[in-house]
Every structure is written in C-alpha cells, then in structure tokens.
Amino acid sequence: MQAGFLKSSLLALLLMTSTTAFAEEATPVEALGRPEAIATLAAACAESPTLKAMFDATEGDGTLARTEVCACLVEDLGPQITLADAEMLARQLQGTLSLDEREAYANTAHLGEITETSFSRCQGQTGHFTTD
Image 1 (cartoon, helix red, strand yellow):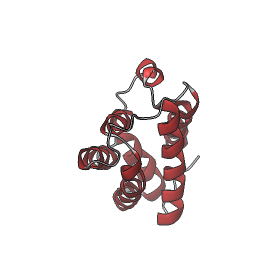
Image 2 (tube, one colour; image 1 turned 30 degrees about the vertical axis):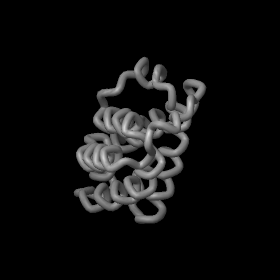
Image 3 (cartoon, helix red, strand yellow; image 1 turned 90 degrees about the vertical axis):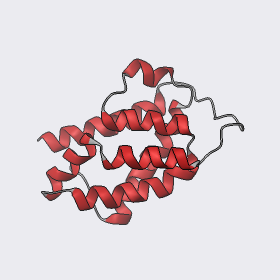
C-alpha cells in the first residue's frame, strides 16, 4: 500500500537523521525558536506532499489531520530548533533534501531524535495516525 510506503519512507528519513552522523549541538549564538524558524517549519509542514499523501491515505481528505498534526509539531518543535534546523526539516518535508546533504548537516542526529519524538507524540495527541 502506498500510504505504508510513504509513512515508512518518512519515518526512515527521520530515523536516518537520528543515526547518521555525530550531532554537533547548535551554538549558543543560534537562537532557538526564532519566529523565522517557526514560520519556516509551519509552512513546510502545511505544504508537505509527503504528509499530505500519508494522511490522505488514512483519512480520505487528510487536510484536518495534517493541519492538526502540523500545529502540534510547530508548537512542540518550534522552540527547540534553529532556523537552519527548520530549513533542513522543510527540505525534508518537501522531499528535496538529499541523503548526502542530510548526512553533512552537523545537527542531524539531534534533529532526527526530536522530530521523531514530536511526530509520534503529535499523532497520539491529535488522534490522527498514518498507516504502516
């Protein structure tokens, strides 16, 4: 089933980001949770073709599910990420981030861990789940 493949692909990407490279924490100079980071994440999540396909497959029109899960993700992840993190997640959600770019990003492991945790928590909190 395509929805299972898409969910597996997204989760695989999230897991790969959590295990591929040694994480280098964001420097204190990089402000976490800046409005630009939150806006970038919100737009990417709302427009993500991957999330759209995943939630459409489980709910017919997954617009409500995507809206609620994205709002939760932005609320949960927004304060924890830098603008650079948000840009990486945005590219991942849009399907334009290559494996080499993901592996080269210094904060890959940390970003993958918090994204995976937040996505799972937000699905549980909103009651909107994707299929395996």
